[in-house]
Image (tube, rainbow, N blue to C red; front, side, top):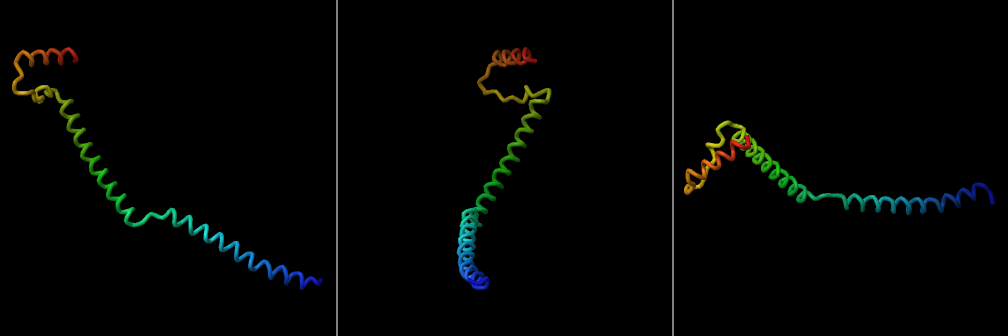
Length: 102
């Protein structure tokens, strides 16, 4: 068999093989990208949830700052609201306990 005939046979069989292999590769690649896609609706839902969490975080940070300010002030004991039926004796006990902690 001549070299030209041999090359013609190899070329004739290699074209379909390359087509089959490349088609299989492209299908596998497309399947992977479809699995990893997040729909716009799901993405918008996640973004809204993230915004809500950030807003709640801001509110909670502000509350913590307010609490720190109250506790750090010297007269925070006066700001404590006790129930109306608290007796003077109970208030004095509480004051003594708080002074011992200082």
